[in-house]
Length: 317
Image (cartoon, rainbow, N blue to C red; front, side, top):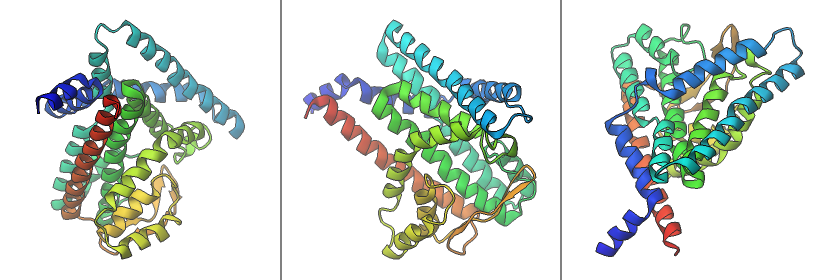
C-alpha cells in the first residue's frame, strides 16, 4: 500500500488532475470573473471589427481563419513561455486545468433547467438557456425547451469536462486550456448564426478536429449497458444527424432513454431543419435529472480509466 501511495504522489500529472477537480468542485471560479468570459467578449469585439458584411464569402472565411490564428497561436506561445518560467510546473498545470474545466457550471445550469421545467416556467427556462446556446429560445414551446435543455446538458458535460480531461491527458494543462478556448471561439463565431456563416467556418472546423476523438470515445462509453436495439437505432439515426462529431453521442443518449431530440432550430431569423432522433418521449425535468445522473457516472468511469492510463504510462509499465 505504501509503495502505491508513493507512486501516486510521484505521479504529478495524476495529482494535478485530481487536485484541479477537487478545487473546481469546492471553489469554482464565478462565471462573471472567469477569464473565459472576457475571452468570449473579446472574440465578439474582434468579429465586429473584421467580419464585414460587404466582403465576399471567401474574404469572410479568410478573415475568420486569420482571427482564429491571432487568438490561438500567440496564446500557445505565451502559455509555453510561462511554463518555462513557472516556479513549480505542477501548480502551473493545475491552474491551467482549473481555467479549462467547467463541471460546476454545468451542474448549476442543469439544476436551474430542472427547476424551470418542473414548474413549467417557460420564460425562466428560455432565459436560462439563452446564456448557453446560440439558437433563439424565445419561440420555443415547453416541448422545444425540454429538447434543447437535454441536448445542451449532454454537450456541455461532454465538452467542458470530458473534452478538457482528454486533452489534459494528451497535452497537459496547455492542451486542456487551448481546447476550451477553441471551443469558445467556435461557439462565439458559430456558422449557424447568419452573420458568421462564412467567418465562423474555420473556427468550427478546427474545433471539430479537436473535439472528434473525445466525443466519439465518450459516446462509446455511454452506450455501455444499453440494449442492442437502442444501439442499432442510434447507429442508423446518426447518419441523418447534421453534425458528424456529436451524432453518436446525441443519438446514443436519445435512443438509450427513448427521448425525442432534434427538430427545427432558429438562429436569428433563420430556421434550420434538423433530423428528429431518438424515441417519442419529450424530455421533462425528470429526464434531465436522469440524464445528469447517468452522465455523472460515466464521467466517474472516464476519470478512473484516464487515471489508470496516466498512472501506468508514468510508471513505465
